[in-house]
Image (tube, rainbow, N blue to C red; front, top):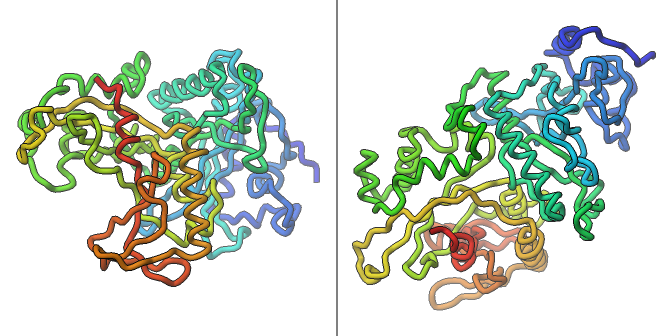
Length: 461
């Protein structure tokens, strides 16, 4: 079959794409790619050939060259609430460390290739063969003007790291919507970078899965997401600067004073902090994770309460460990890697006064905020060390020993490496889960050490 069809307009391409909605992937597999175990091109190549009748290529320019239109085929899943979410990030073009820093955003290879995207969504289901995956929706992707301002900032953040000789320390959580994901056969796929002798992982520009989830829900389910900032604000300031502006009038104020100003009832309920912060941001009653900037960038919110010496009383807890997944998954698919590689945190920091150390009714004041993501060097060293050590212990069997206060174990504790560790977080000692070796253990979480948290926020004034 001749695979060199030329389209006269973007509308013509869209018509063809939309004609496939409701059909299955297998109907377009003209070269039996799904039967080939070695085929890595997958469903995108199948639709290029079988639906659009164009030859598969890996060229730098867009797929529909004469129209400047790039085709992207991506999977969505359906959750228990019958809502769609992206199965993965949308990978765009490879980052060229040697060349990309030389251009402005408007002239960049990224923008020239990706400013016009035709996105075809298909539905991934665990219980279906690939050929039975239904094609759900085809849409022309146009960057929302406010989103584009953040995309530009993200692009510049990545480029700045290259210019600083820090390409080897790029992390997906450095940015908001546009990320630099690893792209290669494995983690050992590295490239030269121009301003450092240290090899850097090969990476590609990509739209985060959180961004793609929001986009899919908007175009398929017609969901709208409230915004925190408008385009005019984003044209001149970063997300962090705008957040700092919102918090600035309240720095130094006590919790009770903040609550009074925000008309929020002080309670010990876990939702109190989130309600207070959303009120400070001017979106009272709105969950932070439902705001566009938090939702699309996968920003999670945590409060930190520092003692007078600048160190929190408690370590910082994260999600409960799935031990079966921990022992099963490779490092870059692991639960702990995914959390810190892809997540950015808004830390809202409170501190107690020196004079109130012994006062049970003492009340902290708002010290400041920061947007934080774990540095890549920490992810690849201390965090990876925790993962490897824990996996080795799980593979040989966890040692559980009765002690006076309950049951001890040999999982990495608070003195492990100064950054992260594992400890219980169950309702009580009877709140247990099964280990891969068949033993039962109190529910465990991974934690960041309180001294490490203190180091992160020490420069907040």
